[in-house]
Image 1: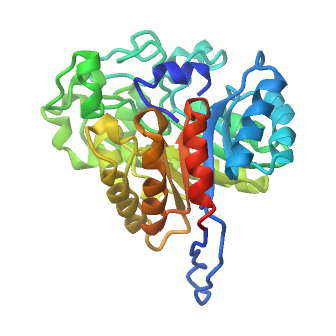
Image 2: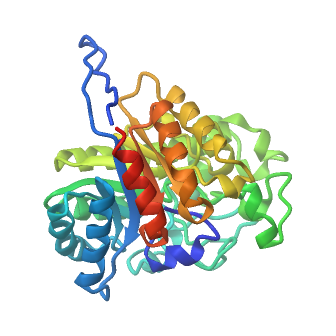
Image 3: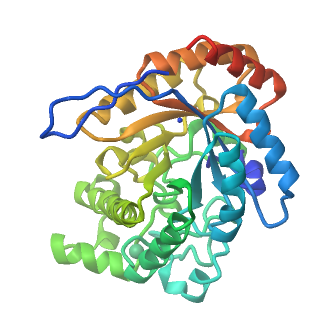
Length: 366
Ligand SMILES: [Zn+2]
């Protein structure tokens, strides 16, 4: 889902054939064949007519899709209405939610202290980096995290939902994808203070307790490995709590993440190979990085290698507007050959009939 120029698409809303799963460590390895998952991110809001999303589900089912990731703005009632319809078209449903970035969240807005603070001392509550919908909560504030976890539970309570799908589970981009910099008229060849978060009092004190220094007083915070690790761990802790809550309700936890762990850590302080999570959907939007389609294969293989020894599967997320329909067959075969559990398209609305025809044709080979 998330992306940048894709901002517009975000407003409107906003996993494949035989595959190997490995058992846990104490058991001998067991090979389970799972169908190759094919999914699409999509949004449904209170004003979306049933005919509209039903038509989308019918189209996706015909092309061989197996799942949809649905953003309802963390509204469990909308999700409860849509899920049985999707299931009737043979589609698994994942409850896609904005996690640390909670633009316009009415409960969070009552607590200005919940928001992340930049190295410049400005809060995301009223000073938004990059775009107006960037309003990020601090992962070190227990009240903010409890609020997020209550939203996770609300979605996990919806019957028949397969997973809660965390998006924006990270910090503000310290570096934007290189292909997007001209669009924002930005040069980022170092960590810039206005995009560097969280220097709130709670984070500074918590870091100080363990490491005996104030991150705000560091001349080169970007060189302080513990300060980086502190923030990676803060996000990991939110994910692990969400994992526990979702599992307590019999649901999986999944997430839309940056391309592969090292890149995610460098760009957005997200290290998803260290998380308790059932499946990740890295957003391999090659055009954002000025890359060709083969890079999607590289990033898929890198992510899977980094997940070695974890019970986490991976579905490659791809950006439909940058894909010509005739590129689809090679793309699907490529991610499958690299070991992906599926492929996920951003987003359902961008899929033209020509894309769907190519997907249907390719899946019939498996
Ligand atoms: Zn903080």
